[in-house]
Length: 294
Ligand SMILES: C[S@@+](CC[C@H](N)C(=O)[O-])C[C@H]1O[C@@H](n2cnc3c(N)ncnc32)[C@H](O)[C@@H]1O
Image 1: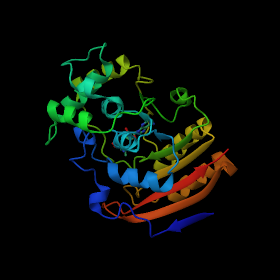
Image 2: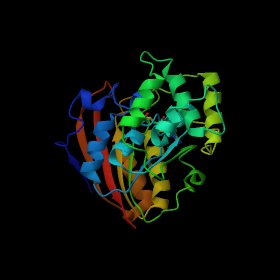
Image 3: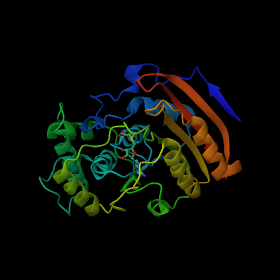
Image 4: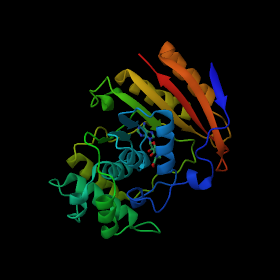
């Protein structure tokens, strides 16, 4: 039984939906499909106030990593694209010491600073490049990285990449934004920088697989696969999935809930769809929310 709630906000307007280009740390590099960090913080505080771990298995360029930092929660992220994984790792674990010694090339002795350096060079290709001074100021003025935070470059639908998580009794919140469809922007090639990112991730011991799925799975396939993997690791989990219709207008909310109910059975309860508003040409933005229990 799924309840559909139409009165939930946030995001309540376009500003709360789009990433904020001035958000400290997050501003280093924002994927075009990134979420708004402060809105994510509000949603997690509202829906899972007692979380002690923030999990995002489709972590992209790290808006969730920034939200976890603001919430004071350790972050566990997985991302398939090496450039984004590198940015996400930097946003999740970097401290002022990493920004004060930015290497110009990957330095195996400074893996986090190397990821930060990749993020800065990626940012240099955008309209609003971040400076070394801004990076340092963000890290000196912002919340500290939480101990135990961890970002992996790998395929979150595969069991192996989850093997790093041993704390099975934690109260985790899984907040993620699965790709909404084929036109979800994918990272630009940046071939040479991609190689640097792979080297930095390897130095940071974050590399788990160099290749992703051969085909681009649908929203319901990828969302249900990553939740299933997380449910194997945690006894209690609050899941919050961002959803928008796909390119052809198809709605994946019901198929996703059906797939998850088939794979997790009675472990899923309190399924809610929170309808927030229309902020993109794709249509209604909503949150699929449920609990996974033992
Ligand atoms: C909508 S984006 C997430 C945006 C993110 N919140 C951010 O701040 O950038 C979805 C991400 O999932 C990643 N992804 C897709 N399939 C994946 C997989 N099997 N394992 C891990 N990451 C995957 C994509 O590369 C993409 O960066």
